[in-house]
Image (cartoon, rainbow, N blue to C red; front, side, top):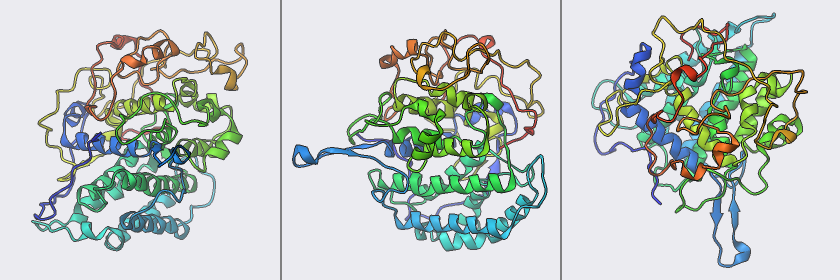
Length: 479
């Protein structure tokens, strides 16, 4: 079946590049962003990359040669194009710059100011880095004005490594790197005619090494989480490894299949294995989801359900890794692309345009689009959401395999979208087992998936939703 792909520019015509500018200045600008061409292109690119890393069914001339092809980290079965290899060299040079700028000595509560020096080095060397490592088709793209292709795309790369001012890093910066790769795709820098191999090279050969570099920056310069949701957030810093990593464990598909919404790869680890350090250490070498979980184990101490309650709650999903993947896509739309603190620093140019998508439906009113903060009201004084015992009335069947505290000695937090009494709604990312019985009635995503915020008609009233929370150390304007 034909899957939508991010469109490319006509290389035969000069393009008018522009310097990207900030457009999202307050919460009420977010609904306008959700009907922009930039939002459309970002969702198409994410779904395109996500489908590519699902395992594939392998056909052979006889039954003995039929099987399943998986796409693991560091696997020789994933070829890297010249464009991917050139950009890998860029990431390697950025990684070597960390050795040139050691952190300042002494304990610090917040980020290490040496990160500002590293960022200054990055900014000073960026023109040469882009000249040396951009694919040839990108650097030679004909321009119709004085502004070059490097002038437009440099802001996305600069914005991908955290804030030198706030000494933090978050999903907004991760989004900026994805936009950088999207710009290269639109300019024809990647092999856009491939049937998934180039996309796999982007995910496994560029996004994963980028995440490894980010984790080194976080540990070296103790970067703070940007715009953190505290215990209500999926991860302090990243989101994409959970989305693509869950796809790696999804059921095998052929090119004619729709992207699955339930099931798992045979012999895939149980989602509950995120609480088992030995399983995490084993799987992190080959899978992006567990690679991100492994970093949590590297930097945090204590019970998993205590420091990562939302990931712990997701580990109880019984409908398979494809179900988790589907939930991650919905959650990315709601908690990353629809949240002002995350997207406020995204810049718009000619490649990711603020212009309205003529085919976009007006965004429906929802708890994600109508409850946006004003520019000067990014914090809330609302009481924290109620707590619950994660073991009480657990009907998902996974609790026995997920080690947890005695039920009479611990009160944990549940993901706000995973309440068992809630009816399945389009933005309920990971429903309870009762909801999963109706999974066949939920809409499939690609290829007919419209990457737009979906209606909240079946969701509970806004007053029933737990209010958003911010960690006390999170600064306004986080990326």
